Amino acid sequence: MTTVINLSYIVASILFIFGLQMLGRVETARRGNMISAVGMLLAIIATLLLGGLDYIWIIVGLVVGGAIGWWTAAVVKMTQMPEMVALFNGSGGLASMLVGWAEYIHQPNPGVVTSIAIFFAVLVGAVAFTGSMVAWAKLAERMTGKPIQFKGQQPVNALIVGSSLVLGVIFIITPATTYPLLLIVILLSLFLGVLAVIPIGGADMPIVISLMNSYSGVAALAAGFVIQNNVLIVAGTLVGASGLILTNIMCKAMNRSLANVLFSGFGAVTTAGTMKVEGEVKPITAEDAYYILEAASSVIFVPGYGMAVAQAQHAVKELADLLEKNGAEVRYVIHPVAGRMPGHMNVLLAEANVPYEQLVEPDDVNPTMEMVDVAVVIGANDVVNPAAREDESSPLYGMPIINVDHARTAFVLKRSMNPGFSGVDNPLFFKPNTRMLFGDAKTSISTLASEFKEAAAAA
Amino acid sequence: MTMLLLLFIFVLSVFLGLELIGKVPSQLHTPLMSGSNAISGISIVGALAATAIHGTFGTVLAVLAVAFATINVVGGYLVTDRMLAMFKTGKKD
Image 1 (cartoon, rainbow over the protein chains, first blue to last red):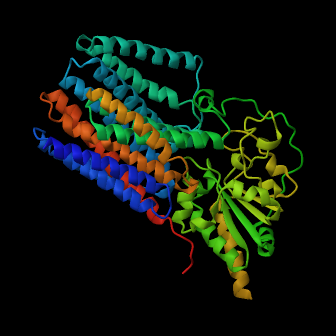
Image 2: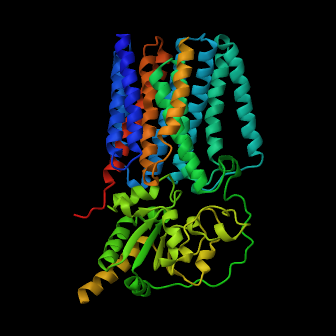
Image 3: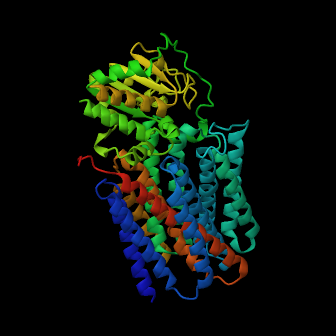
């Protein structure tokens, strides 16, 4: 029987590998996800064959967890996807932590290697759990999205990490007699997850989510060493690696190092750009905006978190269809860190039936931006801020942006003149070819769309 | 020896993972993240096995682990599928 179980684990690992590979291409992604789910099912069934398990309680756990998971996945709105991913991620981290802990209860005098694995499983699992929960609270706006910082924050964090490591070493050397130390490590790690994420601002959430994703993989990996199980090691490592790669992509897209994101509390740094912002803000009415759009032959949309907040994706798609009918070429330029998680905007636009061929990356458009008649910026701010290019003193300086200020005309849809999430002023609003369309993004877009429809009806 | 073998598997998996996910188009970042997030629920295997532990507290921990891992697995896969179902090609009908 053990042979069957172990062979099943190998097959499950292969399915995970193929599944992940297929997730990397649009055409095969959905099937890839299913293949990986089959692998998971296989691993679960194989484990149930172990015998001697507490099947009644297993059923209770599976039913309760399955119902919660199914229900939340079924009702979640696409705009809430970032917090959902954070929530699922947190429960995975917590599960790995509990596995490490339970194994110690089971076998209170483990060998050195197992002790190391238990220590890492509870440490990383706990950080992934509470870190994801704080990320969830920030994304769901249950708490402020602004960085929370206090004096001596970093020494406190360092102290917690340091003491966890010291306690961990003592635990690893004498695991049989130091159960209380393991409990303290668990508590400290839970606390550490909170402290690590509260100083990170909402705009940096794509990085945090990717990183937490990576941690939950590492926690599963450590749990794999605890129970000496190869499928946990393979799957955990794959997740850890993919999370790390995504984190790296996000950091590059913001031109910042991971250390900078984790420790600087972006936006809390009040080094506002010293460059003088010149020019004046020129508002435009929806009617005038319509005339400009009507004459345009190349239009790009640049969505940001504001589009998600206003739930404007369907209205945007409607306007885009009308523009295409009017003979314009329409593209959506998506910055890698627009929104609150990697690929956030892509998911929302896909929900509105925007074909993915029209979704392009900044590098595809920037070189020919001069040929774009109108760039419509919807609730995006930092990713179109020319200060990132021009103002060396700006905290955004060096971040690759979408150069909408080089387009013939840029419409900026905005609720008011408040600066973006990073709290940095945006010189784009003062450029001569920028027009501000104030008001709720969804309403503004719908008004533009109805102008097109009226004109079509009148013709 | 088992530990060394597991370590060997781990090292190979690191390279495999980095190679596998090296270049992914940005539109798939979210599905990739939530899909790999679902895979991290693999700790359900450890959780199930841990229910073999005798003693109330150990069982409580194990059952909690099963429940949380299941949330991660079921929710993760379903949400990823929901997202991917929306990605459509633009060949207009």
